[in-house]
Length: 362
Image (cartoon, rainbow, N blue to C red; front, side):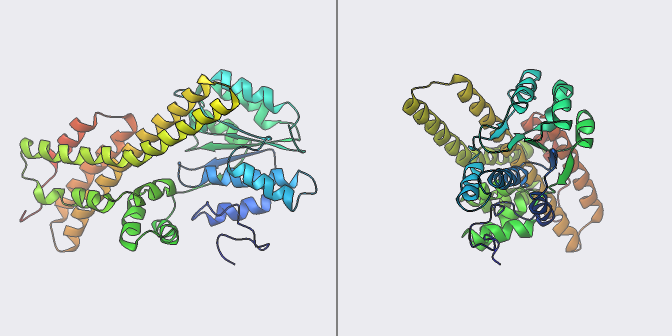
């Protein structure tokens, strides 16, 4: 059976969930007898949100009409667009999920489904639940029979432990590079670009596709990979290299910015057609765009650092000094760890390049 079809010959609703065979197999079986709450754990791009859409479509389709045929296909189509009347997607507003948002979830979940016998609540970025956790706990652990929660989180934080214990946990680890490469090849991406994009994506299908559509993805990896051969231990060279490398971070966000501009235009067009201006909705979309652009930039920096580390690794494999590789790896890892705290990129990269040992013979 082809990966993008099911036995009926229709498009597989889980086709966009790549490299997560165990999670998909579990969710397919769970559709028949769903429990009240699921926690999907995995970073963005690993497939958790796509899986949530597909799972919601299956649940809602089976709760409408006779649960087959046109009803099922309609539910799949609407859930894939996150526009099904009985599918509620809650995204954080600001740095974390607020108590006010949590109360809105609780109030809506206690009502009857707008359509069909079931409603599905998809709660995103739940690792940022902060003070709203207690407000949501009761609703998640004892929802009405007509409500299913699908909670998405990058990780199980201390604030999330109690809620996690009330959910069925489904893990979404980073997508293996081979699975990303194969999907990009199936999408028609040239082999060399697919290979580089898959390696640089960090297990993230969304990022792999973004990179695959960027004509400079191969050149950017080459720029970072070649850094150790250009080092001379001086601050002047470190500053010049840092300028070059940080400029590449700006490049990678350009396709995403174009996509975001198109999304805002569509939102404006929809509001004009309906005669209903919703400034709150526009603000939420813009905040999401900012988060996505920050993540893309950070992920690109991580990918560059990985390419830099690969150069030292290649040198060792060719008979180079192992102590040079060890020292470089420790410095690169230190900066990768610091990225969690949103450091000042330029100073951090310059400091790294000053400290990195040049390769013998460079």
